[in-house]
Image (cartoon, rainbow, N blue to C red; front, side, top):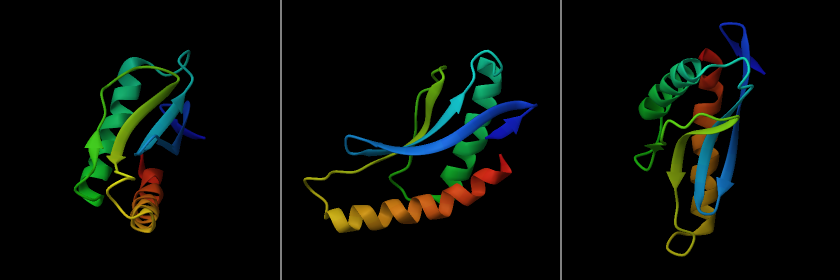
Length: 101
């Protein structure tokens, strides 16, 4: 787990249908809505500067598990091997940079 102002959170990746998401898990008792928004803004800046054009920000919802960024794919229109390759490139490029958040 990482900390922001002594409050723990952790980043994780997941595919939901045809979209790769970068998410954050927080303890709502310790991380305020404003704290979460600050974390999301820092991560989005990293993603915007270091990602592919298909990158998108997500809405600013507040919850224990919250999406930060997404990369939509089309499994019916794109080659699965290319999706896997791009997914690996995105995670390899972005994940190490999350240590600065």
